[in-house]
Length: 204
Ligand SMILES: Cc1cc2nc3c(=O)[nH]c(=O)nc-3n(C[C@H](O)[C@H](O)[C@H](O)COP(=O)(O)O)c2cc1C
Image (cartoon, rainbow, N blue to C red; front, side, top):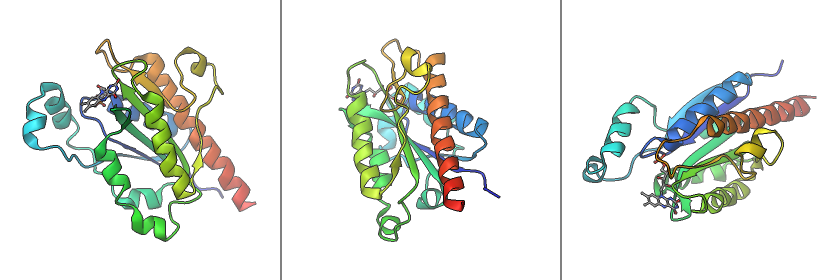
């Protein structure tokens, strides 16, 4: 019997845009039959910085019950879906700090052969969405991961998708819309279905 695909959605979000995409990814993965863990990475910013931004403070309070990511979540997962805001064209340092804590797992080969995919959010349409996703791709290469991008493999990708990974830009301040959320659901489903196919093949 093939077990459900263990899927970890690991994200950082300060003002909620990436969190909304992460929740959509959870929905997409669960609908595809996966066992899912939603995990936020540890906040590194000082309390004064968070409190100085009402949107940041409100989001931190609203998501205080979400469990923090640990290396065990990576060891457990068959699929890892990372979400991060774009910060100067790169992943947020909070997510990078989590990634940089994985040396022991990497040394044991426990990060290899899993399915990896990632999504992001910016303010502007050309504000570095793809450079952020490509930077995460560099990590996946080092881990020996199986990178599963959405490409143009579904009609949603022609409406709002980004072939590198779901990429919301929020200049209007309204957060991810229905199409962005559908793209994140689709990306997660594709990752889970790919991992399920790999599991069937490995078991054969
Ligand atoms: C320090 C910092 C750097 C940022 N860099 C970029 C950037 O390079 N391009 C861009 O379009 N938006 C940039 N932004 C905006 C965030 O990417 C954007 O607000 C994102 O939607 C935040 O996601 P969140 O709501 O999940 O925290 C930056 C924001 C901060 C605080």
